[in-house]
Image (cartoon, rainbow, N blue to C red; front, top):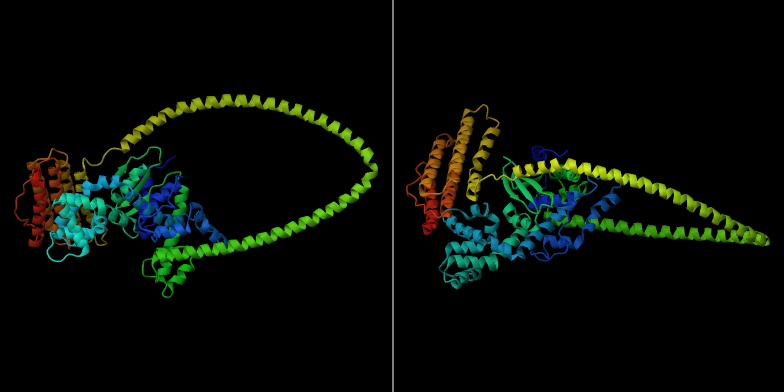
Length: 606
């Protein structure tokens, strides 16, 4: 009987995040465990990252899926007395395939202009937001934020955008960037659009192809949708649905949970995938244990890694501990495993050929001995040849009679068998009809359950982003409660309850505001109420370090999303220019700057 969702959620498989390929490891496990095909050209495609990329190097060593059996061949020949933790060597295969799948995704994106076109509008908005926020934020904060991959891929252009028109000497890149604006007659939107289509999108795809770059689900969603893969991503903390892609109903759904702060994925199991995912889980635990043992070694860590049963443990050790790049260690170990296996296969082949030759010689000797004996026998029988010929004719006659008798008996048995088959066919038809009758209510129940699962969580994109913005308060509540001194320290409990009260109050305000028709009055009430709730909470939370910045960021997101929701509906929200006096002077100035920048965007919609 299938497990309930709550049990599957709790027992979800922890997937390796090596090289920040966690999502691709998860997707590959889903495909292989469900007996689904890998992309046809996964081992042969030409990567957008070039001929010396990680995927290209691995394609030279693994020309097809069968070549991945090298790990099992190595273990069988190197340590035949030691059974592997996972006979499928699924961990090693997934680690290798993760590089191929990542660059395949990025290359597929780069070759699909429809994806670039679908992203264009939101990208232009994000580019302009970069310039707006850059006026009062450090570049590092933006590059490490939710849009970090997009911003980092186009960092040089965005920095130029913030200074355009730049005075003084320009380097070659800046001269190229300036030309976009000149060609567009200083129309910023047109200049940004042309840059995105000619350079920006390809920059974005190339950065997605690079390992050790943590991606959000936004980066992989376009290709997942193009493949028709049904995918659900749930928040590992509160089980809310982050995204749900319906995909092709004939493809098994991929249920995952995501630890948002860490960007780490877990794969929910099914009855079909349980066995293979169990092997992966055991192998990952062994790798984790032996990696810790290697890192604890005071001397030669690389030598220690080579001695472990986990073949690729050196490649998943943190950079800098073993004296070489992790991917270099991966290639060296694969080459070592391949050389060892090929050498032993060659030796085994030579031994096989030698043994085969000895057996052929022995068979030839036996054949000659038999011929000699046969010759003697024929000489002895020559005298009785005539008598034997007569006996032979008689024997042939008897054999023909015997064959006829056997034929008649076989006909009789065949007739009996056909009668039994006819009866069995009738019985199976009756069973089939009964099975159809029993399945009808079960199918009705599945339709009802699916309808329940597909209910939406938030009413619109702004509401979803609002929920995500205040999610940091829930995380801080957990931090307070997980503090070892929580039960003894009344200040911690007081801060916990203040945070809880603030979260519920802001959530209620969001439910009210984002589910009604936008208006200037509604926005002003929403903003004023949120400001009051935050001001009340500060009386208790200011005692704790870092809270002023947290509340500043939360209120900034509330202002931005509130205005965005109103502007999207065509409402011109004009703001009061008063200071946020319940923050420090610097913090209040930042909030005023945010409102001014958002105000400037809202004005043309009037």
